[in-house]
Image (tube, rainbow, N blue to C red; front, side, top):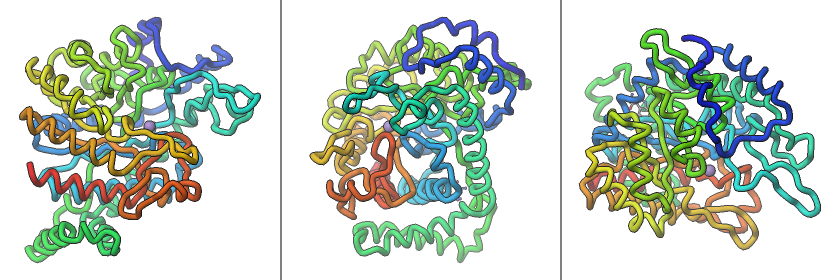
Length: 445
Ligand code: TRP
Ligand code: MN
């Protein structure tokens, strides 16, 4: 792969929303030059492979599971925490594979999810106003001037932390940890817990299927390993641009900071830098669509980002909110269908369902999350289109950030185990529960 992409830098003059104000532009230039010298985190061949997998999902022959932290932190990039997240995603994937009778494309919101868009540049607490926390790639969470000052060298640390996270993910998923049979054993721990009695019969079915395979002597390589992709929001252009390289095989630019990158509601303006950047890289890409998205918006996004209607290229991540998905989503899906486009549609049932609890926590109700997932499936079912996956914020640890679930997490419990620096995540048990419920809906279609 080649060095920094001058073609992309050429377009650096377009307006870009949500970029940090760096204190010193010479330092930013140094960091960019340094990033441009680092080895790619992912290989173009893997990225192409993911595109074909997502094309399968868009055609209804696979299902995408994308999940991880709202914001990764440097402090939480430990072996234990990374293992727990990978483990949770794999456990969900087994259940979904069975429910859908289809391959599940496993993708972490991991190894690069270090930057956050914010509604305001500053945060005020009492008398003190400081720059808002924009993710560990930009500044620190602690509320003091030193920590909150934007520091471009943090982007290099984000690169290194992504590299070590991805290394561990590759080791886990290729080295025996992800063996289907051990992942299933972990799931038994969940379904045998009396609070999860509701999921016992599906878990038993999976158990029988696995015993059947074992009795037949099935013991092939594909039971022992699994493909696992990484993704993050392509928010910080000072990071994504220098990580973009020309693939020497094909001459095409790839953003080598992750296999899949997406842009959010706040950066998807058609004439701005983020859409322009995504239009130039060969990675499969995603765009979040909230409840105010118009038919014209989706049409123009397709024109800009996927003019050749290439299978697997574009994923629309719908985040309407449980109370709006049934009203707002159909017109978009219909218009896209009538264009003859077949992007991958997935649901993000997290971001449209935020609440603030009486005791002051940002939270989400497990029932609202599930309701949005159901609404998403209903919409696609009635239009004859394909609900191709889910995008969730989760952690593998036993936190209490989202309300409800079979453990009935209530507002008081949030005070004991709330750890997220950003949005509330499903905990390990809520994540598995979601997988069981989605598996039940999938087998009905
Ligand atoms: N290789 C297959 C797959 O990725 C089966 C498999 C192995 C698997 N380990 C897994 C599936 C862990 C889900 C989770 O689908
Ligand atoms: Mn979030």
